[in-house]
Length: 402
Image 1 (cartoon, rainbow, N blue to C red):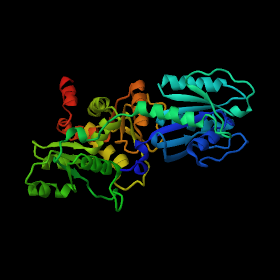
Image 2 (cartoon, rainbow, N blue to C red; image 1 turned 90 degrees about the horizontal axis):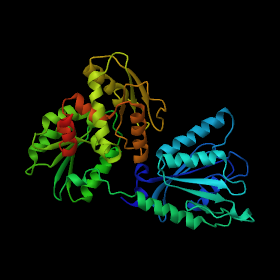
Image 3 (cartoon, rainbow, N blue to C red; image 1 turned 90 degrees about the vertical axis):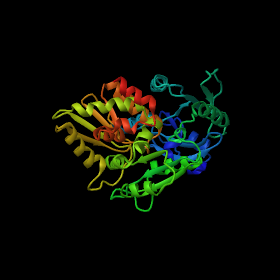
Image 4 (cartoon, helix red, strand yellow; image 1 turned 45 degrees about the horizontal axis):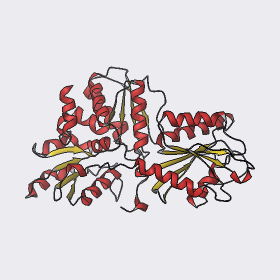
């Protein structure tokens, strides 16, 4: 996969924040070398976050986010401010843009403290430096810049590049479970919810990583799995299934072949697998009226047998032998107030970046609400959670301790 083909969820997200008329959009345009955002002297020109996936040297593939001013006014202005703050949940590196002729406001200082509390790498850009007659000595995290003269833009990009290098980790979806020449079977049911003419993102990413590591990826639907297994002379190392087919695939896969799901792989890749495994226990003790939040990171057309709004609630009712109350969220929306929920069931988060998924788990943990993801929940309800964690002995040991 080339840099230009890197999916947004795998790119560093760089958020530009600040007050209205500080010149955020002008700095964004200078950094990207594109007219990404509309620029005007009128306060509040940027009314909604502007997002652009691109390749930015020396960082590589990134998502640039230009946010509305944090001092916007009125009821609509407050909604824009809240939207800007939501962007923090997915931001890997923050840029705080200050009008250097005005200086840092109370809101700017509060925002810097928020960056620090979230341990978010950030840089402060004192924009409009060409208008200053006198300059003060700045701290290490700050620099003077001018979107007009291009002063400081190179230094800003170099600083962002340094942060990017520090954040880079060599996490894998499946490569650490395999050796060259291993066979992996991917079970991908094609139903009404499957996108026509293509595979969904988790399947694409997993296939690519298998191929990159010189292993063989074989793909079939759940109905063809027995026939595929029978046709192979060499035993597969691993079977990876869509969570919806967990029950059938588990019955058809011999015990001496490791089994897991795309959702569980993504829980390990960008979530907190240990915390999500713990959350599964709550499924066994839900009671009538308990509030359960089912949250998906993407937005899609709901089918008549949709997994999030139809299948999971039905499975949970039957497993818990109770009638919980279900709430649903999708896309970028995730509630701030979680304490009224008894359980959160989250999707595999293939469309969210790691930062946003980690923030959602941390928010649930802080509210004292158990959180589990689709794959782990479905495996638990089918009585095959231990089986599905075979590839991860450290997490099996955790289950045994509990």
